[in-house]
Length: 122
Image 1 (cartoon, rainbow, N blue to C red):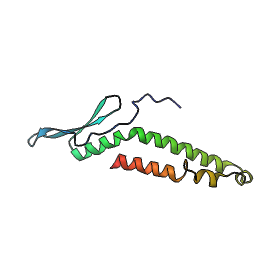
Image 2 (image 1 turned 90 degrees about the vertical axis):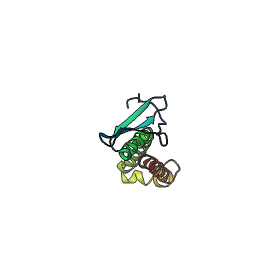
Image 3 (image 1 turned 120 degrees about the vertical axis):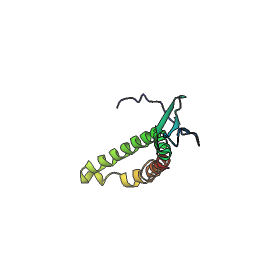
Image 4 (image 1 turned 30 degrees about the vertical axis):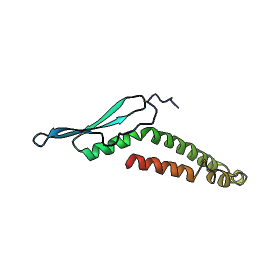
């Protein structure tokens, strides 16, 4: 797998930080910042403030989404490997009692995924 070269997290959207460029006659353009950990600032620009804020929130969650997606893929690979074993070998493993019930698998990963989805979507 290729090594990531993007700015590592955390990224965030500063609370109540946005600008309105425009007026009633010409329309409104909004920008909402996303601050990256290396002092880079990304601006989400558009005509709809609510949509700009939602997009900025999703962009800010990207490093954590990527991290949890990688972990979910790793765990799904283990599930796949288990089910590709011959039936006689499956009966010899502690997969169900060990992996799915452990703190590193199953419900712990589901909780981590749900937490980051909530951050990304509000």
